[in-house]
Amino acid sequence: MRKWFLILTMGMLLIFPSLTSAQSNVTLTGMNIQLWPEYDQPSMLVLADFELPATTLFPVKMTFHIPQDANLVAVATYSADGSLVNAVYEGPTKKDSLQAFTVNLNNPKARFEYYLPITIKVHERTFSYLWNGDYAVDAFGIRVLEPLDTSALSTTPKLGPAVVESGLTYYESGAVKLKSGEQFKLDLKYTKTTDTLVSPPQGVQPAAPVDENTPGRVSLNNSLPYIIGGIGIVMIVGGLIYYWLAGRSSTKKTRRRAHHTPQENEEGDEESYCPQCGTRAKSNDRFCRVCGARIRHQEE
Image (cartoon, rainbow, N blue to C red):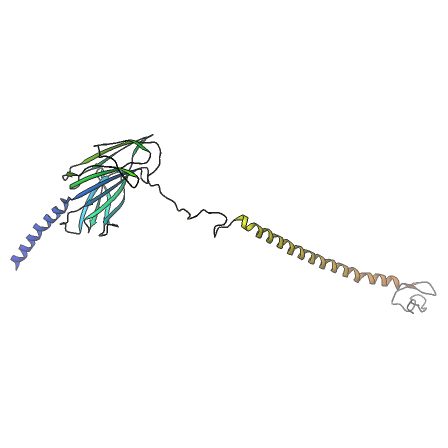
């Protein structure tokens, strides 16, 4: 029993290093690099599509290196119907003068995308791309999109004749075979008189022109009659309340004056004097307070 255990352990030690070595020495069946200068940003968009051999045992981890000033924006795999699906990856992390990221693959075809700066001097643009040879490639190709408003575009090495697709112009190389560690460099130079992008970012645009008749839009012209009418109603109601309060106040003052005036008139009308001694008598006196004579009032 102990003998079989030792044999199994030795076998595992021999097998796993070979598997690790096989993964690190994978030969890609294809690597297609696309360079899109000033596509949706004033920089270079690099799209790297690669394919693993059909005999690859999945899942498998692949590590790639990109320039230190690169901005990795996407890592994805191709599904059976050709659509891209986000892939699980680690990094990027700085390693020497480069950045490294590792992607976990369950499919043979995948892509990663990143941006790199372009050197711009007035109307002259220059850029250099370098494949650093992470893996051997059976068919390595590169394709360059010509930016808008461009003249005098040149590449080193020289690419094939222009190809027009969907109104855009491309230049591409033939497929070359590269060994592991073998580099491929391309220098690009062109003249561009404007800052126009091939596919500028689009904001949210209305489906139809927006004016005062657009549903849901509040327009002062449409609301002005209602505002004026509301102010008029408020003024009318306020005026009525003011006159009503003013009328009540005037009525109270009149009543007060009417209440005091009869008393004064009454006192004035009922003044009388004693017929005997002439002493002034009050309205309630029936006899003179001096001589005692009977006082005659007018009603009597």
